[in-house]
Length: 430
Image (tube, rainbow, N blue to C red; front, side, top):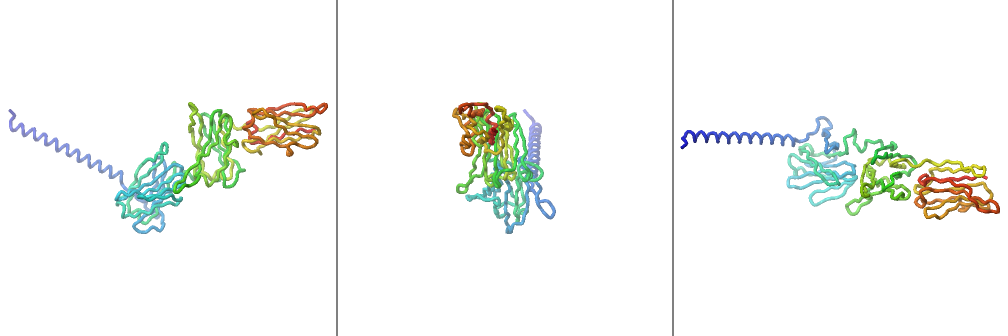
């Protein structure tokens, strides 16, 4: 049987253990509370005349927070978001009673709402919030479109309500962390001359003058033999309060381009501030797969022809001399045609029946002739779609010989890709 002393000694040990555990929990709680308080310490404006906040990073992006006088009444502040990225971004403020204030942007369009009210607004979209509906320390949440465009909460930042009062508070949210705002970092007047590697092949994106002002002309060439395409999105219209996008695609399927011109012409004002050129190709089992994206600001497309070459550039121009009975006929190409078509022009000084002949994909012959001083067609020119021609186009030289018999003299064959978008002038002198 245990003595009273032993029982008291054991009780004292248990009490000491409980006190020790309680002390440990108290210290841990204080430490945790201190960490939380530190993590949620409010962001305070910089000292000085401008009083703006220091820059911050959100998921690898750069955010500048600027205060501006915008005629905001005392006791309120105006929240504004400035972002021209194609990716969805949102600021969210939660009030005392759980009221949610949202301002979001996607592809240059702004969506603003709180409670049961929402609207689509322009670049100057804003929300005026009464500070009496907020706590002393205001939490602003940052949301962003992530994988597959899923709207994802990223982080929160705490501000003192008194630092926001009476100000127009603009969050300039830019993709990336380059010097300057990333989607204004490029010189809008600079020609485009970019390159990247996609699926092991070099892709070049080069602009040239010759387009139409206020429009972007995008051309595509590729030597990839399976399905390949370049896609971009435009802001196409509005249904009610919702905008919708349209995907524009130039693709090559079974050796043919769609559209046949290999080109699209888009109004500049239909494009987002940051134009994304997406590169797609067929991979395993023919699945159309997004391989890479190149971003270029839209001003660099204005009035220019932007040519994208995926793989080897288009075949070289044609400049050939053909000997026919001691005379030098010439076949010369120029880049004055329409993409997706070839224009063939025939000129001859021979006085008797003379012709140039070629065949389409179906084996049907096409002729430009001259007889009795007149051409047929009258303008001595034929324009045909590239898609209607075989892989190699053969030009045959014909003329009238003894007894006026139409006689084939010689031929020249060229890869049809060398004809695309070009004018082929054939000159057969007398």
